[in-house]
Length: 126
Image 1: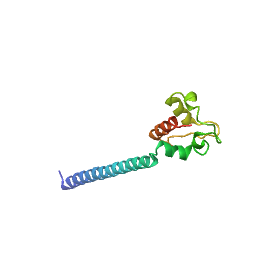
Image 2 (image 1 turned 135 degrees about the vertical axis):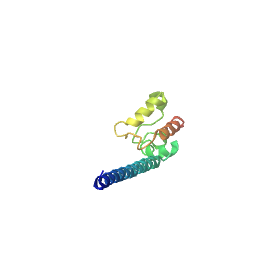
Image 3 (image 1 turned 30 degrees about the vertical axis):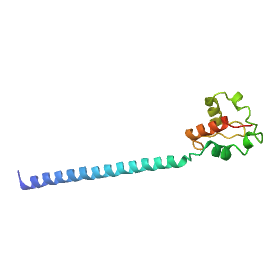
Image 4 (image 1 turned 180 degrees about the vertical axis):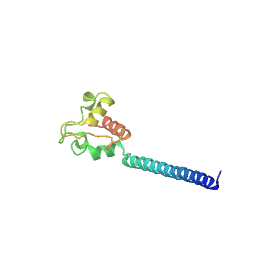
């Protein structure tokens, strides 16, 4: 083999190896960015959860229209047990909302908080 062919072949191998290394670096850089994005999303999700108590949630979301559970702009909650005999029906109602009562989406009240709110509502004394 001539020296020119050996040089060209070794140069081709060098370019090929360099390309592999650079694409590997680009791939690992992309993986790092994906991991950082995923971690940031987990932090944002945790930040959306306020983990308020049922009473705090009631005051924030319900008390204006149902003061202390009594009639106000909205109806009294004293018939809650009769109207919503189980928690699943009450959860569905709160998530959907009705009329001027806004839906309590997961962005507003997460599932754990909704359970806290329902516990509070079930224990309201009139």
